[in-house]
Image 1: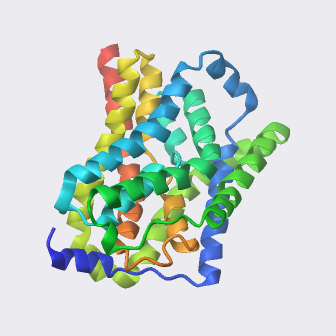
Image 2: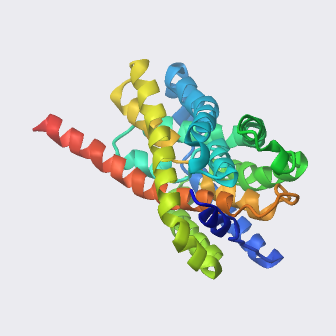
Length: 317
């Protein structure tokens, strides 16, 4: 990647006032509330009686994806900037995406397992997201021998924990309680909030980057390729791990989708709404990688769902 492209990428800035950030936080909280509306304690019973798939899914999301993302960033070398690498690591550190359950239903995957993995990874994100990002972010800066060029990566732990707890923990708890005590209300709200999550993220990306659209369009071909490779790696981790341990086909589909769809909306909120990078030089590469991931995983999720559906038709034929 040329120095001109790197400069154009890192010159991209997204600034939101307090009102804009609060709006994004509220809408994202509603999105997570919608995810939790499909979670019922009874759904977990069968899954946890046979915990193999859950444990492998957690291993893919919390251990393998951040680790292999770090290795991929090193392997890409000068093809990416350090800001792009940290953007990849941030996305890999986020929990499963809120549309993964919808994609699993389209794929005829194991829905109960999908919901379980989304719920668990979201709950653990309070600790695992800042930990994985701190660990692999610092390892990358050190291994790539650029640690001297940027400030030491220090996570403002309380700031990040507070943001994740408010955006994920509280809505998740309220959603589960609503599903348990008000099942009719939960059923009526579930699908509209799923579509809201997709519309919200696309709108957030467009509005955030509209003022930087010239620089964004100049760099998008590079970002597209990097996110494509990263997303294919994530899908491959889920599918190959599930296949290696001979999980049922429905569970293999679930692990593929859950590992390949990440909550990059949370990543954007952490970048824009916390002091995570207050002391860093311009880091537009992180913003663009995180934002484009959120757009691309909708496309890749629908694509892989179509592939699974076609595979079912061939079997029936």
